[in-house]
Length: 122
Image 1 (cartoon, rainbow, N blue to C red):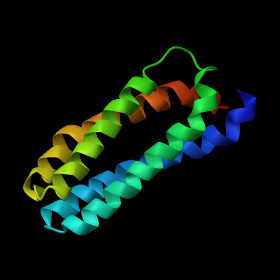
Image 2: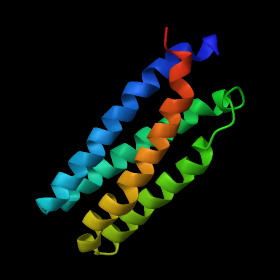
Image 3: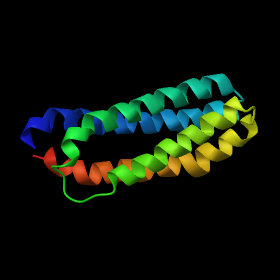
């Protein structure tokens, strides 16, 4: 796992940044700034997909975990939120972010941290 040390070290703070972005999305929706919220959501989705992509070679070396399963849930909840926006159901977005996207992201983030932090703690 030493060869992935730098990657893991970069992933962990990125998880916090994405969480902050999702919280900011909630604020944007409260202010009815749907387009800004959608842009932030798409950026968060790209960040999450990038993390998953760089994690692919690492997964086989990790102890048993639920990262893959939780990633699918996060991805589906975010896609559902984007679909709502694209179908003109902006009013559902705030609820979806609060009740689906944020909880699923938090669960995935916690699993990632639980599995990865032991490799970077000195």
